[in-house]
Image (tube, rainbow, N blue to C red):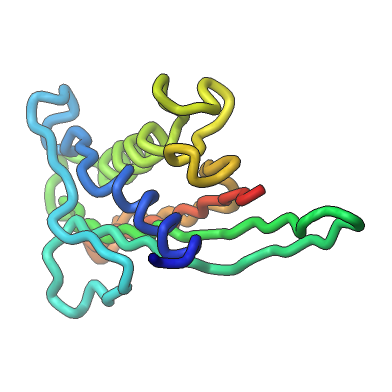
Length: 159
């Protein structure tokens, strides 16, 4: 059996890998797009990967000691997303696609009706106490070079 860190990373990836969002070319939602590449081993966008690409990585662990109780442990993961933008098109705004992807990720990580912690918290199917987007989100719309980037921090409370 894999350790808890691996199981949590897999659960986060499973929640996000199949999401879809409207393209910047058709914000009506009639044309949806999803990830072409997903994984837990980050690759550079210069490695000619198919985009949009999404990776889940563990960034750090926070452990807090509590007297006469088990330690409290939080894990921070980063969701790293690369996407090409339509920088040559005057009819689209690169930020529109970045925003659509960000909203889709937040919705995918929101508590679901079938989740024990609903509606306050996502427990990743009772694997953790809480999983939520939390922290400084880095958004690069790709206005200059056509390469968009999102780094979305996800805080997981184990206990």
